[in-house]
Length: 297
Image 1 (cartoon, rainbow, N blue to C red):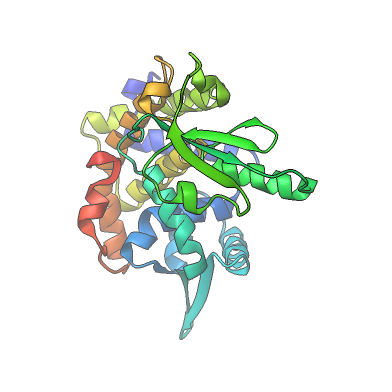
Image 2: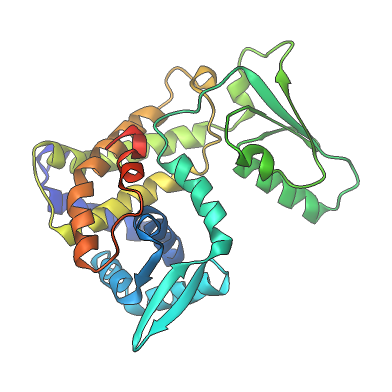
């Protein structure tokens, strides 16, 4: 069957098949997606039974959900609360900073604006292997490219975390370059990201085509599809260094993927939010902020 002829329900089942075909499923990561996408905008607290219903639609067993929730609580991402015989989970204060930073990246309208200046970070020598490895990972998560031993660089963006979350002990300088190489994007490994963006666009094509024809999904199915779309996008965009458009290759597929994700997400927003309402979650804390996702849905 051609992707354009597939109904929305068939497309959703195919997406669930793909989720389980990736290998061992990290249920905790999927739940993090649910919290960031749907729970935090409604206050950050949800009944375990609601999560179990949603995960069951994604063919994830109750025991796996409980194990994942226990892990997230042990790692201080979530806090467990009891209300009679019911269990609730709330986003812990310790995890809110990371959630907020990730949310801005996931739902950005496009590449960040750039004034042409750069951030350069330099680390003194003498650090042990463990310290160096942790520092390099932290800098990569902030979109810095390693330009040499203990040296990191990235285009400046007006994002507080780019300087606030730099590991301690580094000298950080912002300024204009006196000379720039012709292919600065080569400092970052973009080929794998580009392939992931193209694959995501292809994987969403059946559902996007069905929704564009006016096909609909039941509220629970819409919420399940929304989680899968958001999770797939999140897995890629949080590995993306977030380069400005001026530094990206001419054939960069990231924005085409963003446009498709936005269109599908916008079509799913209404019925999926209806499911959250019916499941007893509080109203959104800031409905305008939610509607502004991806530049406006």
